[in-house]
Image (tube, rainbow, N blue to C red; front, side):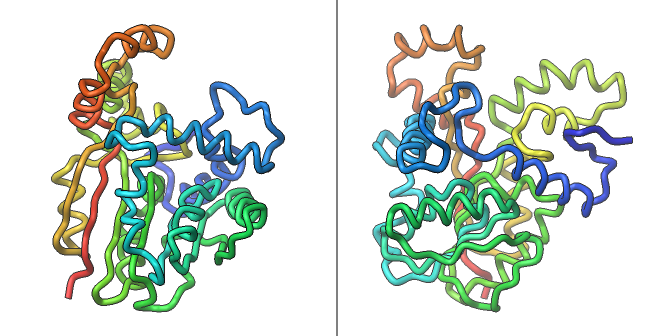
Length: 287
């Protein structure tokens, strides 16, 4: 038995087909609650959705653009970089402006088209392709860095994606990945709201988490379970939590806003890091 949002009973190929369909129909443009006033895929539209994205990330590290540090952009000039899940192209643009030689892939044709449109509008040249990260049509030992932000946990078989990442990395290559955090506030809220009642109707925790997430499916990992999975392929693993204001103040949006005005930003940053939705990891390819 299945439903339109996915189910643990779906076979992996069907989940991947569902992922492709969902991300083609629902672009990662950060304007779900309040649509952008600008023409879709115009220069102004890209600037608007980038502003929204960076605003949502404002509690990460106290800088205007936390991805300068998270992506280590200062050290990527001339590097060969693969981005898995390019979405609307914001990170691809950052990587290219840093001087990297970038290949961007996404399972969704809409995302591929949008990223290419962004690069064309901004006079940037990158290699953008539609591709399933479980089966990367790319050479072995090609990339200095593989970057993916909030993508591979949506895959039907995340372990296969990690195996492919390992294959295409150079021997001294680095991987930087973000997946969803099972120890984060969103997961705890879902457990309280849904799983306590869904359990009695035969619903699994994974199923309840998927229903409260973006995407057709989504897996959540604890720090330890994610480290164990990464350790199969990578070494020197570092893991950190990052979160947004909903992690710092877990209330409905309208109720949250007044509290955000009175809680000091430093306190919000500390709370978001302690129980954030995002599990960020860095690793090196095993020798």
